Length: 402
Image (cartoon, rainbow, N blue to C red; front, side, top):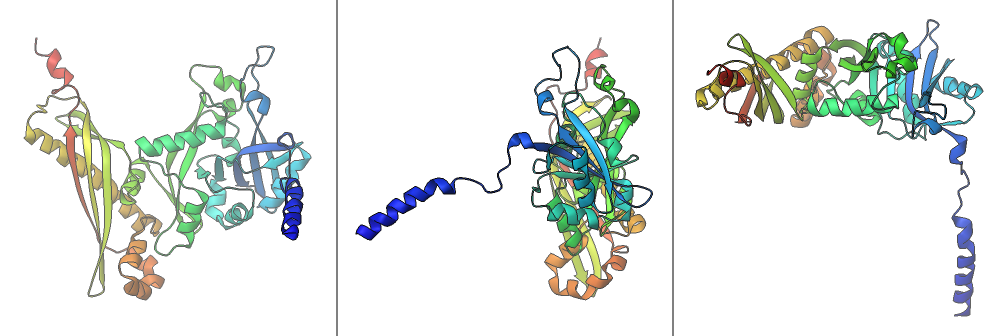
Protein backbone atom coordinates (compact mmCIF):
# COMPACT_ATOMS: atom_id res chain seq x y z
CA UNK A 1 0.00 0.00 0.00
CA UNK A 2 2.86 2.34 0.87
CA UNK A 3 4.47 1.75 -2.55
CA UNK A 4 1.18 2.56 -4.27
CA UNK A 5 0.87 5.86 -2.38
CA UNK A 6 4.45 6.81 -3.20
CA UNK A 7 3.86 6.06 -6.89
CA UNK A 8 0.69 8.15 -6.89
CA UNK A 9 2.46 11.13 -5.29
CA UNK A 10 5.33 10.92 -7.80
CA UNK A 11 2.85 10.79 -10.69
CA UNK A 12 1.04 13.89 -9.44
CA UNK A 13 4.32 15.76 -9.06
CA UNK A 14 5.29 14.89 -12.64
CA UNK A 15 2.01 16.11 -14.18
CA UNK A 16 3.05 19.79 -14.57
CA UNK A 17 6.05 18.75 -16.65
CA UNK A 18 3.76 16.99 -19.12
CA UNK A 19 1.69 20.07 -19.97
CA UNK A 20 4.42 21.89 -21.86
CA UNK A 21 5.35 21.58 -25.53
CA UNK A 22 8.94 21.10 -26.57
CA UNK A 23 8.33 22.74 -29.94
CA UNK A 24 6.23 25.64 -28.66
CA UNK A 25 6.13 28.72 -30.90
CA UNK A 26 4.50 31.96 -29.81
CA UNK A 27 1.81 33.38 -32.10
CA UNK A 28 3.72 36.65 -32.33
CA UNK A 29 6.61 34.72 -33.90
CA UNK A 30 4.47 33.43 -36.78
CA UNK A 31 3.60 34.85 -40.19
CA UNK A 32 0.26 33.20 -40.99
CA UNK A 33 0.04 32.28 -44.68
CA UNK A 34 -3.42 32.05 -46.24
CA UNK A 35 -2.50 31.48 -49.89
CA UNK A 36 0.39 29.96 -51.80
CA UNK A 37 1.19 30.57 -55.45
CA UNK A 38 3.42 28.31 -57.54
CA UNK A 39 4.94 29.45 -60.86
CA UNK A 40 8.03 28.77 -62.94
CA UNK A 41 10.30 31.41 -64.47
CA UNK A 42 12.13 31.35 -67.80
CA UNK A 43 15.08 29.50 -66.25
CA UNK A 44 12.81 26.72 -65.06
CA UNK A 45 13.16 27.69 -61.39
CA UNK A 46 10.13 27.72 -59.12
CA UNK A 47 8.61 31.05 -58.13
CA UNK A 48 6.75 30.84 -54.83
CA UNK A 49 4.33 33.56 -53.71
CA UNK A 50 3.00 33.57 -50.17
CA UNK A 51 0.08 35.73 -49.06
CA UNK A 52 0.50 36.57 -45.38
CA UNK A 53 -1.99 38.22 -43.04
CA UNK A 54 -1.16 41.61 -41.55
CA UNK A 55 -2.70 41.03 -38.08
CA UNK A 56 -3.22 44.70 -37.23
CA UNK A 57 -5.25 45.24 -40.42
CA UNK A 58 -7.63 42.28 -40.34
CA UNK A 59 -10.05 43.91 -37.90
CA UNK A 60 -10.25 47.24 -39.70
CA UNK A 61 -8.67 48.57 -42.85
CA UNK A 62 -8.69 52.13 -41.51
CA UNK A 63 -5.55 53.22 -39.69
CA UNK A 64 -5.37 55.98 -37.16
CA UNK A 65 -4.90 58.59 -39.85
CA UNK A 66 -8.00 57.52 -41.76
CA UNK A 67 -6.03 55.90 -44.59
CA UNK A 68 -6.11 52.37 -45.94
CA UNK A 69 -3.53 49.69 -45.17
CA UNK A 70 -3.67 46.32 -46.88
CA UNK A 71 -4.81 43.35 -44.77
CA UNK A 72 -2.26 41.06 -46.44
CA UNK A 73 1.21 41.18 -47.92
CA UNK A 74 2.36 38.88 -50.72
CA UNK A 75 6.02 37.88 -50.71
CA UNK A 76 7.75 36.17 -53.63
CA UNK A 77 10.96 34.15 -53.92
CA UNK A 78 12.63 31.72 -56.33
CA UNK A 79 14.42 28.41 -55.98
CA UNK A 80 15.31 25.25 -57.86
CA UNK A 81 12.83 23.45 -55.61
CA UNK A 82 9.79 24.77 -53.76
CA UNK A 83 11.27 24.06 -50.34
CA UNK A 84 14.29 26.23 -51.15
CA UNK A 85 12.17 29.07 -52.49
CA UNK A 86 9.93 29.10 -49.43
CA UNK A 87 12.85 29.02 -46.99
CA UNK A 88 14.60 31.81 -48.90
CA UNK A 89 11.69 34.09 -47.99
CA UNK A 90 13.15 34.27 -44.48
CA UNK A 91 15.40 37.02 -45.86
CA UNK A 92 12.32 39.22 -46.29
CA UNK A 93 9.71 37.93 -43.83
CA UNK A 94 10.65 38.68 -40.20
CA UNK A 95 8.63 35.76 -38.79
CA UNK A 96 8.36 32.03 -39.37
CA UNK A 97 5.97 31.37 -42.26
CA UNK A 98 3.16 29.20 -40.90
CA UNK A 99 1.25 27.17 -43.50
CA UNK A 100 -1.34 25.41 -41.34
CA UNK A 101 -4.06 27.95 -42.17
CA UNK A 102 -3.75 27.93 -45.96
CA UNK A 103 -7.02 28.60 -47.75
CA UNK A 104 -5.86 28.42 -51.37
CA UNK A 105 -3.02 27.07 -53.47
CA UNK A 106 -2.87 28.76 -56.88
CA UNK A 107 -0.87 26.89 -59.53
CA UNK A 108 0.43 28.78 -62.53
CA UNK A 109 -0.69 27.52 -65.93
CA UNK A 110 2.89 26.82 -67.04
CA UNK A 111 3.52 24.70 -63.95
CA UNK A 112 0.30 22.81 -64.63
CA UNK A 113 1.40 22.12 -68.21
CA UNK A 114 4.85 20.89 -67.19
CA UNK A 115 3.48 18.68 -64.41
CA UNK A 116 2.26 18.79 -60.81
CA UNK A 117 4.46 16.08 -59.28
CA UNK A 118 7.04 18.46 -57.76
CA UNK A 119 4.35 20.69 -56.27
CA UNK A 120 2.42 17.71 -54.90
CA UNK A 121 5.55 16.23 -53.33
CA UNK A 122 6.19 19.46 -51.46
CA UNK A 123 2.57 19.99 -50.42
CA UNK A 124 2.05 16.42 -49.22
CA UNK A 125 5.42 16.19 -47.46
CA UNK A 126 5.17 19.43 -45.45
CA UNK A 127 4.01 18.42 -41.96
CA UNK A 128 2.43 21.79 -41.14
CA UNK A 129 -0.10 21.63 -43.95
CA UNK A 130 -3.63 20.47 -43.43
CA UNK A 131 -5.44 19.15 -46.49
CA UNK A 132 -8.62 21.23 -46.39
CA UNK A 133 -7.39 24.02 -48.66
CA UNK A 134 -8.48 24.24 -52.30
CA UNK A 135 -6.25 24.10 -55.37
CA UNK A 136 -6.94 26.09 -58.55
CA UNK A 137 -5.06 26.93 -61.75
CA UNK A 138 -4.27 30.55 -62.64
CA UNK A 139 -5.62 30.98 -66.17
CA UNK A 140 -4.18 33.64 -68.48
CA UNK A 141 -1.90 35.06 -65.79
CA UNK A 142 0.65 33.88 -63.24
CA UNK A 143 -0.17 32.69 -59.76
CA UNK A 144 1.99 35.55 -58.46
CA UNK A 145 -0.14 38.18 -60.21
CA UNK A 146 -3.30 36.43 -59.06
CA UNK A 147 -2.30 36.76 -55.42
CA UNK A 148 -1.51 40.49 -55.78
CA UNK A 149 -5.14 41.54 -56.34
CA UNK A 150 -6.85 43.48 -53.55
CA UNK A 151 -10.50 42.59 -52.96
CA UNK A 152 -13.61 44.17 -51.47
CA UNK A 153 -16.24 42.50 -49.24
CA UNK A 154 -13.70 39.86 -48.22
CA UNK A 155 -10.65 41.90 -47.22
CA UNK A 156 -8.33 38.90 -47.37
CA UNK A 157 -8.01 37.87 -51.05
CA UNK A 158 -7.46 34.21 -50.15
CA UNK A 159 -10.79 34.20 -48.33
CA UNK A 160 -12.43 35.79 -51.37
CA UNK A 161 -11.11 32.97 -53.55
CA UNK A 162 -12.10 30.31 -51.01
CA UNK A 163 -15.67 31.43 -50.35
CA UNK A 164 -16.39 32.34 -54.00
CA UNK A 165 -15.34 28.85 -55.05
CA UNK A 166 -17.58 27.26 -52.43
CA UNK A 167 -20.57 29.43 -53.36
CA UNK A 168 -20.19 29.02 -57.13
CA UNK A 169 -19.91 25.25 -56.75
CA UNK A 170 -23.05 25.29 -54.61
CA UNK A 171 -25.34 27.42 -56.81
CA UNK A 172 -23.81 27.56 -60.31
CA UNK A 173 -22.12 24.16 -60.84
CA UNK A 174 -19.49 25.31 -63.35
CA UNK A 175 -16.63 25.00 -60.85
CA UNK A 176 -15.20 22.24 -58.71
CA UNK A 177 -13.88 22.23 -55.15
CA UNK A 178 -10.70 20.13 -55.11
CA UNK A 179 -8.58 19.58 -52.00
CA UNK A 180 -5.08 18.14 -51.89
CA UNK A 181 -6.42 14.70 -51.00
CA UNK A 182 -8.95 14.86 -53.86
CA UNK A 183 -6.26 15.76 -56.37
CA UNK A 184 -3.83 13.07 -55.24
CA UNK A 185 -6.58 10.43 -55.21
CA UNK A 186 -7.50 11.24 -58.81
CA UNK A 187 -3.86 11.11 -59.92
CA UNK A 188 -3.09 7.72 -58.36
CA UNK A 189 -6.51 6.07 -58.84
CA UNK A 190 -7.21 3.79 -61.78
CA UNK A 191 -9.76 4.91 -64.35
CA UNK A 192 -10.01 8.63 -63.58
CA UNK A 193 -7.94 11.72 -64.34
CA UNK A 194 -7.79 14.93 -62.28
CA UNK A 195 -9.39 18.32 -62.88
CA UNK A 196 -8.95 21.73 -61.25
CA UNK A 197 -10.99 24.93 -61.50
CA UNK A 198 -9.42 27.87 -63.31
CA UNK A 199 -9.24 31.37 -61.87
CA UNK A 200 -8.59 34.55 -63.82
CA UNK A 201 -8.60 38.29 -63.21
CA UNK A 202 -11.26 40.35 -64.99
CA UNK A 203 -10.19 43.87 -65.81
CA UNK A 204 -6.76 45.42 -65.41
CA UNK A 205 -4.60 43.34 -63.01
CA UNK A 206 -2.08 46.16 -62.58
CA UNK A 207 -4.75 48.43 -61.11
CA UNK A 208 -5.86 45.51 -58.95
CA UNK A 209 -2.47 45.60 -57.24
CA UNK A 210 -3.16 49.03 -55.70
CA UNK A 211 -5.54 50.14 -52.98
CA UNK A 212 -7.52 52.18 -55.52
CA UNK A 213 -9.05 48.86 -56.61
CA UNK A 214 -11.08 48.70 -53.39
CA UNK A 215 -11.83 52.42 -53.15
CA UNK A 216 -14.29 52.54 -56.04
CA UNK A 217 -17.87 51.29 -56.38
CA UNK A 218 -16.87 49.20 -59.39
CA UNK A 219 -13.40 47.65 -58.90
CA UNK A 220 -11.09 47.69 -61.92
CA UNK A 221 -9.91 44.13 -61.28
CA UNK A 222 -11.93 41.21 -59.97
CA UNK A 223 -11.35 37.52 -59.41
CA UNK A 224 -13.48 35.29 -61.61
CA UNK A 225 -13.55 31.52 -61.87
CA UNK A 226 -13.30 30.47 -65.50
CA UNK A 227 -13.55 26.92 -66.77
CA UNK A 228 -12.12 23.66 -65.50
CA UNK A 229 -8.60 22.46 -66.30
CA UNK A 230 -8.33 18.87 -67.54
CA UNK A 231 -5.24 16.81 -66.79
CA UNK A 232 -3.72 13.60 -68.07
CA UNK A 233 -1.99 12.18 -65.01
CA UNK A 234 -0.22 15.29 -63.65
CA UNK A 235 -0.11 17.48 -66.77
CA UNK A 236 -2.64 20.03 -68.01
CA UNK A 237 -3.96 19.05 -71.45
CA UNK A 238 -6.79 21.54 -71.98
CA UNK A 239 -9.72 23.53 -70.67
CA UNK A 240 -13.47 22.96 -70.46
CA UNK A 241 -15.62 26.02 -71.08
CA UNK A 242 -18.43 26.97 -68.70
CA UNK A 243 -21.10 24.79 -70.30
CA UNK A 244 -18.73 21.81 -70.54
CA UNK A 245 -17.70 22.34 -66.92
CA UNK A 246 -21.34 21.99 -65.92
CA UNK A 247 -21.51 18.85 -68.03
CA UNK A 248 -18.55 17.42 -66.13
CA UNK A 249 -20.20 18.11 -62.79
CA UNK A 250 -23.44 16.47 -63.96
CA UNK A 251 -21.47 13.36 -64.87
CA UNK A 252 -19.57 13.34 -61.56
CA UNK A 253 -22.82 13.87 -59.60
CA UNK A 254 -21.52 17.13 -58.15
CA UNK A 255 -24.38 19.48 -59.07
CA UNK A 256 -26.12 20.84 -55.99
CA UNK A 257 -28.01 23.58 -57.81
CA UNK A 258 -27.73 25.59 -61.00
CA UNK A 259 -29.78 27.51 -63.57
CA UNK A 260 -30.75 26.14 -66.98
CA UNK A 261 -31.73 28.75 -69.59
CA UNK A 262 -33.32 27.83 -72.92
CA UNK A 263 -35.02 29.43 -75.93
CA UNK A 264 -38.80 29.23 -76.20
CA UNK A 265 -41.18 31.06 -78.55
CA UNK A 266 -38.39 33.38 -79.72
CA UNK A 267 -37.63 34.40 -76.16
CA UNK A 268 -36.07 32.92 -73.04
CA UNK A 269 -37.07 30.96 -69.96
CA UNK A 270 -35.09 29.42 -67.16
CA UNK A 271 -35.41 26.94 -64.32
CA UNK A 272 -33.48 26.36 -61.12
CA UNK A 273 -32.28 22.82 -60.59
CA UNK A 274 -32.80 22.03 -56.92
CA UNK A 275 -31.90 18.36 -56.87
CA UNK A 276 -30.02 16.02 -59.22
CA UNK A 277 -28.70 12.49 -59.10
CA UNK A 278 -26.38 10.90 -61.66
CA UNK A 279 -25.67 7.23 -62.22
CA UNK A 280 -22.86 5.98 -64.44
CA UNK A 281 -23.71 2.47 -65.59
CA UNK A 282 -21.06 0.57 -67.58
CA UNK A 283 -22.04 -2.31 -69.85
CA UNK A 284 -19.72 -5.03 -71.13
CA UNK A 285 -21.08 -7.52 -73.63
CA UNK A 286 -18.88 -9.75 -75.78
CA UNK A 287 -15.92 -7.49 -74.90
CA UNK A 288 -17.83 -4.45 -76.23
CA UNK A 289 -17.89 -1.62 -73.69
CA UNK A 290 -20.52 1.11 -73.48
CA UNK A 291 -21.46 3.67 -70.84
CA UNK A 292 -24.90 4.84 -69.80
CA UNK A 293 -25.23 8.18 -67.99
CA UNK A 294 -28.58 8.63 -66.22
CA UNK A 295 -29.46 12.01 -64.71
CA UNK A 296 -32.63 12.54 -62.70
CA UNK A 297 -33.71 15.55 -60.71
CA UNK A 298 -36.18 18.28 -59.85
CA UNK A 299 -36.45 21.92 -60.84
CA UNK A 300 -38.46 25.06 -60.17
CA UNK A 301 -39.42 27.65 -62.77
CA UNK A 302 -37.20 30.67 -62.21
CA UNK A 303 -38.14 33.11 -64.98
CA UNK A 304 -40.33 33.16 -68.10
CA UNK A 305 -40.02 35.94 -70.69
CA UNK A 306 -42.56 34.61 -73.16
CA UNK A 307 -46.31 33.99 -73.18
CA UNK A 308 -47.02 30.61 -71.58
CA UNK A 309 -49.84 29.01 -69.62
CA UNK A 310 -47.88 27.41 -66.79
CA UNK A 311 -51.06 25.78 -65.47
CA UNK A 312 -51.18 23.62 -68.60
CA UNK A 313 -49.47 20.23 -67.99
CA UNK A 314 -48.49 20.06 -71.66
CA UNK A 315 -46.57 23.34 -71.34
CA UNK A 316 -44.79 22.04 -68.24
CA UNK A 317 -43.94 18.88 -70.17
CA UNK A 318 -42.50 20.99 -72.97
CA UNK A 319 -40.37 22.94 -70.48
CA UNK A 320 -39.09 19.68 -69.01
CA UNK A 321 -38.13 18.43 -72.47
CA UNK A 322 -36.15 21.61 -73.14
CA UNK A 323 -34.36 21.33 -69.79
CA UNK A 324 -33.53 17.69 -70.46
CA UNK A 325 -32.19 18.55 -73.91
CA UNK A 326 -29.99 21.34 -72.55
CA UNK A 327 -28.43 19.13 -69.86
CA UNK A 328 -27.98 16.24 -72.29
CA UNK A 329 -26.19 18.52 -74.76
CA UNK A 330 -23.85 19.79 -72.03
CA UNK A 331 -22.95 16.25 -71.02
CA UNK A 332 -22.47 15.05 -74.60
CA UNK A 333 -20.23 18.03 -75.42
CA UNK A 334 -18.13 17.30 -72.35
CA UNK A 335 -17.80 13.62 -73.25
CA UNK A 336 -16.75 14.47 -76.79
CA UNK A 337 -14.10 16.92 -75.62
CA UNK A 338 -12.69 14.47 -73.06
CA UNK A 339 -12.56 11.65 -75.61
CA UNK A 340 -11.43 13.46 -78.75
CA UNK A 341 -9.52 16.56 -77.60
CA UNK A 342 -8.03 15.55 -74.25
CA UNK A 343 -7.89 11.74 -74.62
CA UNK A 344 -8.19 11.78 -70.84
CA UNK A 345 -10.83 10.09 -68.69
CA UNK A 346 -11.66 13.05 -66.48
CA UNK A 347 -15.20 11.62 -66.38
CA UNK A 348 -14.32 8.61 -64.24
CA UNK A 349 -15.80 6.02 -66.61
CA UNK A 350 -12.84 3.71 -66.11
CA UNK A 351 -13.16 3.97 -62.34
CA UNK A 352 -16.80 2.90 -62.60
CA UNK A 353 -15.85 -0.09 -64.79
CA UNK A 354 -13.16 -0.99 -62.25
CA UNK A 355 -15.75 -1.09 -59.46
CA UNK A 356 -18.47 -2.85 -61.47
CA UNK A 357 -16.39 -5.32 -63.49
CA UNK A 358 -13.08 -5.72 -61.60
CA UNK A 359 -11.98 -8.81 -63.54
CA UNK A 360 -12.68 -7.21 -66.90
CA UNK A 361 -10.91 -4.05 -65.78
CA UNK A 362 -7.70 -5.99 -65.11
CA UNK A 363 -7.73 -7.07 -68.75
CA UNK A 364 -8.26 -3.62 -70.25
CA UNK A 365 -6.70 -1.13 -67.83
CA UNK A 366 -3.36 -0.89 -69.67
CA UNK A 367 -5.18 -0.02 -72.89
CA UNK A 368 -7.87 2.13 -71.27
CA UNK A 369 -6.52 5.41 -72.66
CA UNK A 370 -7.02 4.12 -76.21
CA UNK A 371 -10.28 2.32 -75.42
CA UNK A 372 -11.78 5.34 -73.66
CA UNK A 373 -11.62 7.55 -76.74
CA UNK A 374 -14.00 5.26 -78.63
CA UNK A 375 -16.43 4.09 -75.93
CA UNK A 376 -20.08 4.77 -76.90
CA UNK A 377 -21.88 6.90 -74.30
CA UNK A 378 -25.67 7.08 -74.03
CA UNK A 379 -27.05 10.02 -72.01
CA UNK A 380 -30.53 9.89 -70.49
CA UNK A 381 -31.87 12.94 -68.60
CA UNK A 382 -35.19 13.17 -66.77
CA UNK A 383 -35.86 16.38 -64.83
CA UNK A 384 -39.31 17.05 -63.34
CA UNK A 385 -40.58 20.59 -62.71
CA UNK A 386 -42.13 20.76 -59.24
CA UNK A 387 -42.99 24.43 -58.69
CA UNK A 388 -43.75 27.38 -60.96
CA UNK A 389 -43.24 30.15 -58.40
CA UNK A 390 -45.57 32.60 -56.70
CA UNK A 391 -47.30 33.68 -59.93
CA UNK A 392 -48.92 31.26 -62.34
CA UNK A 393 -48.34 33.02 -65.66
CA UNK A 394 -45.58 35.28 -67.01
CA UNK A 395 -45.65 38.86 -65.73
CA UNK A 396 -45.73 39.91 -69.38
CA UNK A 397 -49.25 38.46 -69.66
CA UNK A 398 -50.53 40.59 -66.78
CA UNK A 399 -49.23 43.79 -68.40
CA UNK A 400 -50.83 43.03 -71.78
CA UNK A 401 -54.31 42.25 -70.46
CA UNK A 402 -55.43 45.89 -70.50
